[in-house]
Length: 201
Figure 1: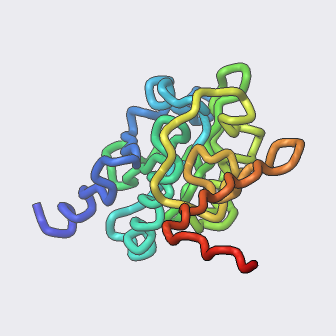
Figure 2: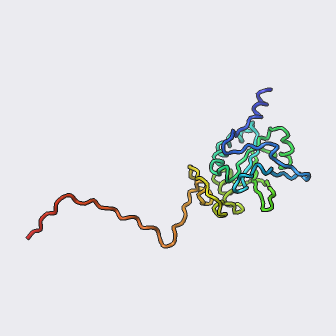
Figure 3: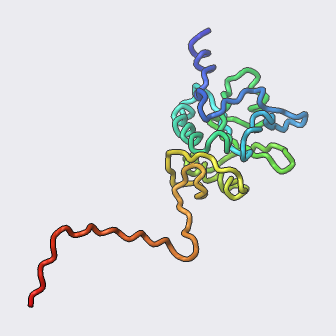
């Protein structure tokens, strides 16, 4: 095998919060519609996310790795799907053609409707991680907090985006409860050790 072939077969995302997808994670119907198999998203609290279609030899894909990994850390793998598909995999043509992937990197928005059907649509918004997280939280009202879902551990990284639910380290603060803010406790003053001077007559 030559070096070029080996380079093409290398995945840019080695585990972590980015889920590497294979050709066999996709279903293609007789009409050419592409969907994900249930095992890909079964553990997700909110069955939405992003899938990036990339090629290891693509310079733009390589420079985008750090940003996409950062997005996956913010989104949390148990809440939103942040997946990646290496387009040099075997039998990749049928997946790429069915999804009209013509350039790299291409990002698709993934969601599961109330009827259980999966949709993969083009994501054309900003590729900044904060903006993408904000899109996940707000699009189709999928925020966990709004749906009364269980809270997940906050990311240690604070961001300016997001819907303010705090699930992924969002920086927005909740408004104070009615009745005004709590009063700060009174400071205790140290007792004076010196004796008082006698009163003048």
